[in-house]
View 1 (cartoon, protein in one colour):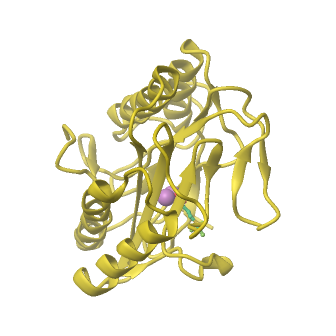
View 2: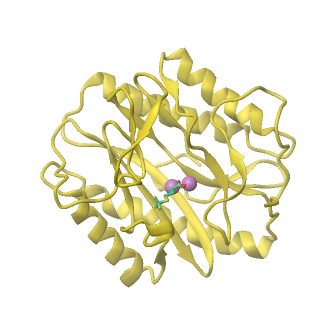
View 3: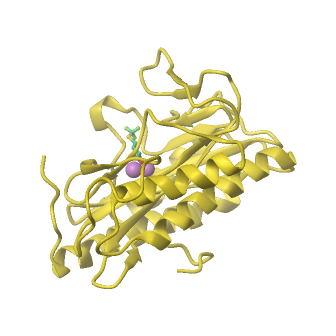
Length: 256
Ligand code: MF3
Ligand code: CO
Ligand code: CO
């Protein structure tokens, strides 16, 4: 599939979808506390997206995914399935990944939440992963190559002795949930596709405390670290502008 360049009208629609996805993360924050189940977080987000936002939760029934959000706790890298049986406890780290469809367009974003009191090494993994995303966003403008983006993420992660998950990547986004190009979170400067105004894509680095290898659980969705150590992920949906970048899924707490 070819990369689609969005018109200003399309970007305007993606801006609304992106803002809605961001607002779900803002809405759910006070509920992410010890004792809550990931199914309860799913239920709250589903109700908010469908009843308040009048939007569609993209994961629900996507290739058979059974829930409206992804909840990935501790050693879960991505695509964790919300469950009544998964109760958050103090010390957990959790990624909540929200994708909404509004007016046909997708907005895709995720962040890490610290549950109760979290160990310093876990907090460091979460912080460095967010720094990787932010350093990558800073590079987004016409003329930057995808390899530049991958490289800055890889360099920052490895400087902190963390590994980059290579089995999953960012992606173009728009009318489709996962469009071209693939946005790798590792790479070589000056290589890969060159960005042009009107491209929209996600950057969503996953960093592991141990080795990069992942394994898919028998539910067909949940991705875990092979070595059982912690993993963290942050994601934004971005648009390339004439002079730089617009973060379509920015939250109020962020500096964009
Ligand atoms: N939101 C994920 C991404 O960032 C995709 C989730 S697919 C699902 O690309 F089916 F697991 F929801
Ligand atoms: Co994504
Ligand atoms: Co996502």
